[in-house]
Image (tube, rainbow over all chains, first blue to last red; front, side):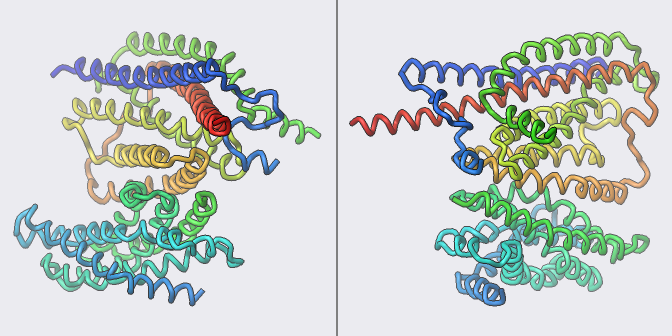
Length: 65
Length: 219
Length: 252
């Protein structure tokens, strides 16, 4: 087989994996955004006004400060 | 600390032959190999040290997931965590107990398997010596995996997956030292000393990491 | 004073809300820069001449070598985040190393597959137990183990702390593994020393390689920020669902 075959197939593979990684990350972000919007529509809101420093679920972090 | 060591030893002996199952597994793995590669005695004696090392490696991983899980189930892990002794020391003792109860029998059983593999006396001795020196490292690395997966109900397979890549250095130097003992030009001491160094290194790193994981992974 | 100022700045970044707003401002720029660097890098890669020895296949180097670099850089980023998790209990660090692990695995996979495709015409075989390939393969296994551990645990903050320990142990181990694999390799293949690319790289090849390396690095950080963002969202969603469930049970 010619060398071009290997060159192009390796570029294709790299492209495919990169594309999968990008799409996955992007789709994941979109799905989470949609879920957040749904929750918001359902009336569940973050208590962002409340003095809670770390919204990430990590009570120890908040306690240690 | 001696009390802990004795308690762990007693428990694992009483628990219904953890060591026996380990030896049985070791025996079975090694016995299956000739059926795979053929009964050629020359070939078997050539690959024998490697087979025994790999078998011992796999068998040493067997009981690992119970190392901290048993303590977690009956609540004594919490007691160990609350003790005033440094946790690292406790973990070290537990590793030693695990090694004495589950891994040392493998080392003792290895000459027998060496005979099956048609290895000569020097080779059998070398494999036994390298296993004796190298297998504590397996227990120490395994402790990290066991501590990491302690809260998982079915962590056994995961522990093996996590631990095996980290044990590659031990395997490499263990096997090359046992080959070096038989094959003439290669010197025995350098790989053997490196193996010793790796074991000592992991004797520090392993309990440290396991203690850290236990502290952080507790409920 | 300056130190406390630095700490305030640092903890500013630690605030996930602030991180999210910063990320949404930065991401378009990072994505754009990544795209530009990739276009330029790919153009350079195909415009440059082939090596007289390796021929056209030298072009594989432009995607293979940066991916291999990235696979190691990603692990270093994860190790740093792991320290952040264990030492400072930094809420973002938890998220950071969890988000980086699949990306690292992806880049390592690229490095492995392109390396294999490069090896076939160069060495005549798809896989050689060469020291470098073997180390990268072990690295790949370690990435997969970390991902598996993260998936197996339900509680995200506990999973983060426990896998941080594993990442650090692995990080300490990588030099040992590298050293032992080198030793093992010289033991088993004393004569045929395989070199990739060769020790001296001509400027002709270096330029596209560097551009591609920058492009890959930018790509990694863009994806990393995106993954961190969706991980933060995921945790918020979980928290809010829990809050909603608690409120519902209180009402009924």
